[in-house]
Amino acid sequence: MHPFTAVCTVLLFWGAKAKPVRLTLPRSIFRGMLILAAGLLLIQLFVILQVATHLKEIGELYSLRSEISSAREQKTVLLNDMAEIKRQVLEIKHLNWRFGVMLGQDVDRSSGMVYGKGGEDGPLAAPSLNQSAMLEQELEWLQAEASSQEIILNRNTKLAEEKSARWASTPTIRPVKGPITSGFGERISPFSGEPAQHNGVDIGARTNTPVVAPASGKVIVVKHDANMGNVVKIDHGFGFHTEYRHLEKTLVHEGQALKRGEMIGLVGNTGVFSTGPHLHYQVYVKDRPVNPQGYFFD
Image (cartoon, rainbow, N blue to C red; front, top):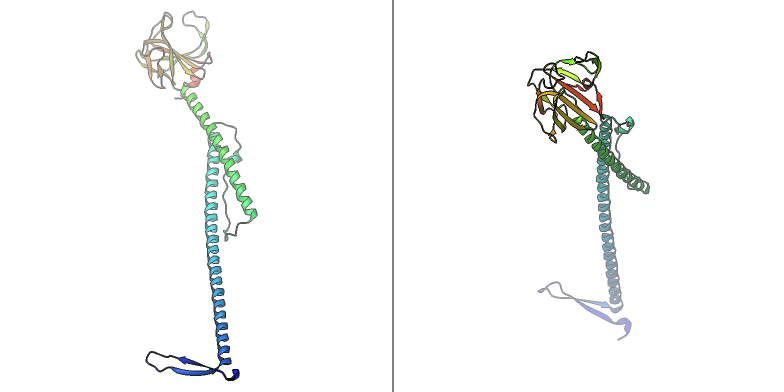
């Protein structure tokens, strides 16, 4: 057979019961159809590969968008947290300032000011190098300011404790209620008739009237003196001492710790240098007698 007259027979089956269709084609046409079919198959495979590649890229794009969205949310949370921390640090700074003023410290008024913020919030932009640097600076400021305010708070707390202890040790109330029958300073002595220095005050009161401690302290002297009668002396700390004379009876012992308002004895008329029931009361500051009336705050 001549090669140009060669044919190919193709049987087409349309179903199990249908008769096959016989199709006779020239060999050249058959080859062309095979080449075309192969070409179409290759094109289809290429398209499938391209689609798969694009689908992967789309998936990565969605993942990247999700990460960007998550990063923005985290940035928002971070900024909000930093803003809250800064607000708290500024509040502590303001409280430290007020605390310092109350404690009598020389503080800069502007250091305690807390200013507000305003303006319209816009959408968050993607973090830039400048923003990252600003965030880092803000964090450094917060750390430094928090550390500074902690030091100031500790200092103020210690000062407040010292002032509280000093206030508790300051004789601020009358040890007994009654009129002042003889004041502090120079007077004519009722015993010699000559000018004399009176280093305390005499407070008139009935015998057995309770005498109380005007401040916290420790009893350092309990004795009987021929001239001053029954005597109690208290060390209050911070340079304060108080003394009580002519007591009818003492109700404390040496070394006893006292709080402000606790009973230490009873008014009496004991000792040679007493003309009637009263309390002779003295206040010493660093071993120097001072006018007790300057410490009557009640």
